[in-house]
Length: 586
Image 1: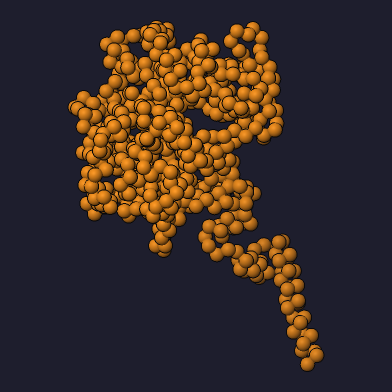
Image 2: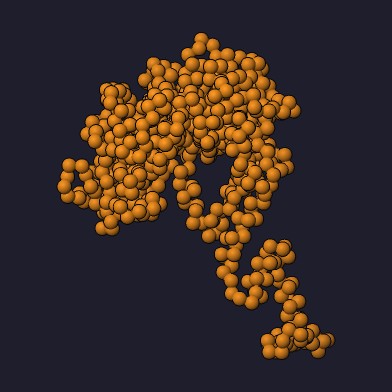
C-alpha cells in the first residue's frame, strides 16, 4: 500500500519533469519533436477560445516580430465598434477629457474667451470674477507672449494655444499683453482656476413678456442654469418663453428629464427606454415644476438631437406648448459609458428612447454603414426637406395621437407642430463673400477695438441696443472695409442683403461685450424667421397648434416660393450661423 501511494505521488512529478525537459530540448531540436507537440497542446489549452482574444494572444506570443499590442488594440477596437450602430463608439484615453469637458460643466483655465482671426490671440471677453479678471486682463487685450514664448504672428494652431493657457488650478501662467494706448507690453501673472462652461448661452427678454433662452447642450449644470435664468427673466416680466434647442446635440438624459419636469404637471410620462429584452424604464413628472403655466414654444432643427429630442417629444406628446422649426436629427439610442483601466471607454448602445406616445426617436440606419447615416442631413437638403414640409413623407403605420388629439409621427426625429423653412431670401453672392471669407466678422473685431471703452461700459441689452443703433454709418463703413479686403461693392445685392448684414454686424459686436450671446441674439432675432414665428404664436390669443387635431402645419407666409430655395446658397446652413467665428473659452 505504501509503495503504491508513493508511486502515485511521484508519477505526476516524473511526467512533469519529462515534459519540462522535452520543452527545453525542443528549443534546440525544432517543432517536430514530441516534446514540442506536447508544449503546443498545453499552450493551446491555456489560450482563450473566442477568435478576437485568441488572435491577439497568438500575435503576442508567436508572431515573428515584436508588436505593440496596445497600439494594435487601439486601432482594432474602433473598427469593431463601427460595425454596430452609428452611436456606439470607442473613446481612447487621450480623448476622454476633451469629450467629457463640455458636459462636466467646468475645466481649469484662465477665464477668457479669445479668437485668433488674425493670427493674434484677441481677448473678446473676460469672465467676471475669474482668474484673468482678477489679474487685470480686459476685453480687447492681445496675448503676444505665453510664459516668455512669442505666440503672436507665429501661426500657432489654436489647439496649441489652448494647451498652453490651460493647466491645473493653482498653477501660474505669465502673459505678455499688447494693450491699446500702451506703448510697452503689459506683463501679468494669472493663477489658473476652475472655469465654468455654461450650457445656457443666452437669456433675454425679446418683448415685454416674451423671454428667449438658448440652451446649447445638456450638461451637468443645465437644469440649475435654466432655473436661475428663468427666475431672473420672470422678475423682468416673463410670462411666455421661447426655448431654443436648435443645434443642441444632446448630453445628459437626467437634465432633459429635469427640464421637462419644470414645464409639466404631475404624473406625465416624459420618456421611456426599452432594451433588447424589452425591459422598460419610464420617467414621469413629479409635480414640482415651477413653470407649468408658462406659455411655451420650443425651437428645433436638424441639429437638435438626443436629449433635445427627448425634451421636445415629451412636451409635444403631452400637448404642452408648441414645437416650431424643422425636423430634428433622429438620435434615439441610449449609450452607457463603460470605462477601461487605462482611462479609455466604450460608449455602447444598450436601449432605445421612446416618447410618451410610443414614438421611436431613432431614424433608420444600417449597422456598419456610417457613410449613409452621416449623409442623411445632406440628403434631406437635396430632397428639399429644409424648404418644404410637403417633401417629408410620413408612414401611416407610425402615426400616433397625443392625449389632446394632435397627430404626430414616428420614424426618426421630432416633426415640429409648425414647420418654418430655411430662409435664404436675403442671401446674395455679396453676403456669401463677406461672410464666407470672414471679412464681416473681422470688421466687428476691429470695430470693437476702436470702441472698446464704450463697449466695456455696457451692462444691459438696452444699453447695447442704444449704443449700436446710434451708429448710422456702420454698414457703409463696413462696405468700404470689405472693398479694402478685396470684395468690391455690388450695391444691388447690398440693398437686398442690407438688413441681414447690419443685423450680423451688430450681433457679432454684441457678442464681443460682457453680454456675449445675449448681445448676439438681441440683434439677430429680427432676421430669424423661426424666432419671429414663435413670437407670433405666443402673441396669439389661442395657440391653434396646441388644439386637438391641429397636427403639422406650414408657417403660412414663411412658405418658400419658387425662388426661395437652394439656388442662392450651396450648403444647408442657416444664414444666421454662416461663417460663425471660432471663439474659444480658456
